[in-house]
Length: 293
Length: 315
Image (cartoon, rainbow over all chains, first blue to last red; front, side):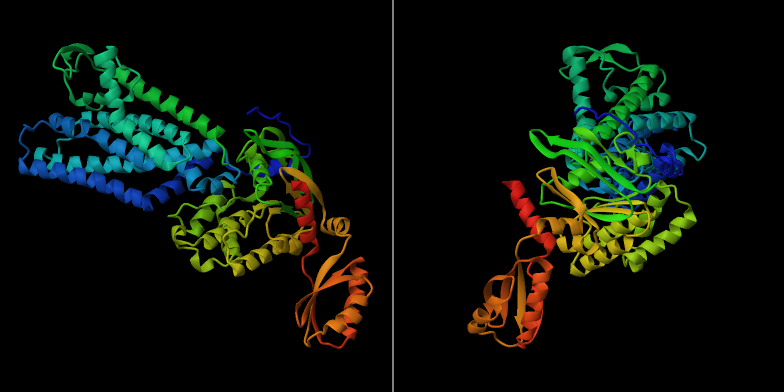
């Protein structure tokens, strides 16, 4: 659609002063995120997310208890490397889907957008506010998972067995969460139907990207540096020494030797940061152009 | 500066369908303007472009002189909007939802609290103020929506069929609320299917059909301009009216062009000649001493206009 010519009629004094009293874009986003988060925390979806994390935590606790922590060898890096580094992405993906999947699509489908968009607020504020709320709610879930692991770790390894590498991995997990939410919000902005948005996000992040990643390596024989899934092993890198080679010979799904790629630290961080920035901006651009028809 | 709304060449096409065709309309000042039209006429499309919910194919919409397309935030700064029965986040209470709106509008916390109590009382939702909105009926949600549009005491109110979803009592209450909204330095612009609602509260009407503005004028001018012909009036008596009496007396009353019997005590008279002829007919019917208990136009003047113009517009 062609953009209309933009003009402003004379005599804006009273509106200008009125508008001057409005909070800025970021202030409105923060305020909106507060109420959106409150809505999330009281909703069934939050209970569902906590239940998912609780079940995962219960299974981990049961398995550890059953085998009496066998294989840990008193090594915190091994413990957190496998349970946190290798498992937190599941919590991140689920929380991204649950809190972000319908964040934008739901505004159209559930008509909550009409409640917000009649207000003097930029779409950027709405998008940012909802993003921050989804991020905060997801972080609660991630912290809950971390608390379960730390409780188990303290029991089996001692209360002082809290490696700094866990903090490093946590920071990477937050970046991965940002990247995932950016992509989730992009897909959510593409659809006006929450179900489609959630389905596409779930399929892509739970196994879609993994399959694409595998196909690219095995069939196309290129490094899949543009797939978010490729950067995921970074979550366990802080617990791994030495780091895997960037390019090595391994065995593919058919058992034949294949070139295996592992992201370098800078590469993995750049992929996550790139996904966050590019998908967030693309989602925002889509939302700015989306109409409440 | 008085509150205003202006559409300049506002056009919206959806593919080959033109929902709104070059709308040029300016309403200004402290008044209530009814925006009428059949389903699909383009009323909601117009209101959505005034609030930047959809974008024009051509033209521009101004609220208080500020283009909604150029700067929606500034345009809507002193505007309360209610379009399409919005949903409120289900886990929030009306009080929290209104607090959020007050905050987003930059109102001081104390003012938000005071106004929240006021507007919730106005829409009779005080006792539900701290219950989660998700449990409310559609009508209750609509009351909270109305409260949210009033919270900041805006200069311009854009309301899209505000009675939607309300029971008859709710419709009457909304009508009272809208009537109460008319005050100095406030422009109320609302679309409605309920012509009686428009007649009751509006000073001006604009009629839209097939995306084109048919007219915009004061209610008196509109009815005066378009209702020049005969109107049907229902007359009800205590005593039965014999055909002989109708033919011999009632049909002879000046201005009465025809009659139809509804039942032994009720007649529909077709009267031409405007208000004077109707007044004369009323006096003559009273003089029959048959216990005239009701003398009422079968359709309001605006309804006559609406039906004639919308039908004409479709041809």
